[in-house]
Image (cartoon, rainbow, N blue to C red; front, side):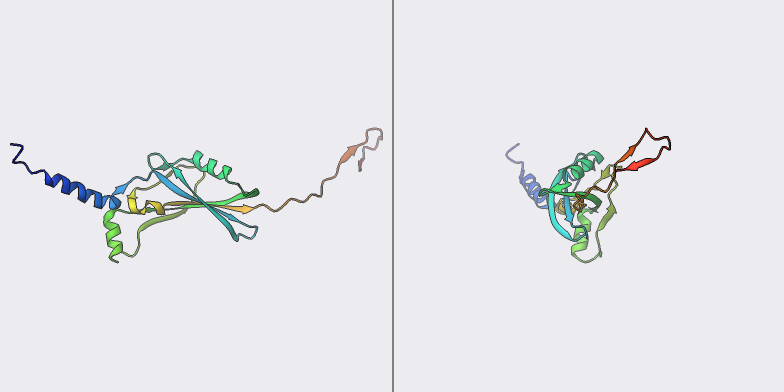
Length: 168
């Protein structure tokens, strides 16, 4: 009986699945973060990229905070956190094909300010587009602090009854 059975359809099915794998919708396992370092006038000086691993399609607020704090210094220069935003695409395989054939003008994408106080859900999308999901963090270079001390010491003179202060 096993001699009469034809199992070639299984191999054909596996081949088709392998060809369609990039188009299949899946929850991302990571998201790209671009750290943009600017000068005092917000002119871009440096850009650095890394990938943050995410669990269950959620970027946790603690991970975002740690990424921002640990990347405030770059090449020995201190920067302050200026702003951040994210760009995520939610797209199925059929949307990719329609977009490629110019039947739809745009993909369902989101560009929003990054909420530091909330977790962020990354939408599922076709595997071939997951690399476009990006968090942008912008840092501004700190101005060098002045070495001149602008505060003055004030001494209270307790020997005088008029209770006046005297500057040094």
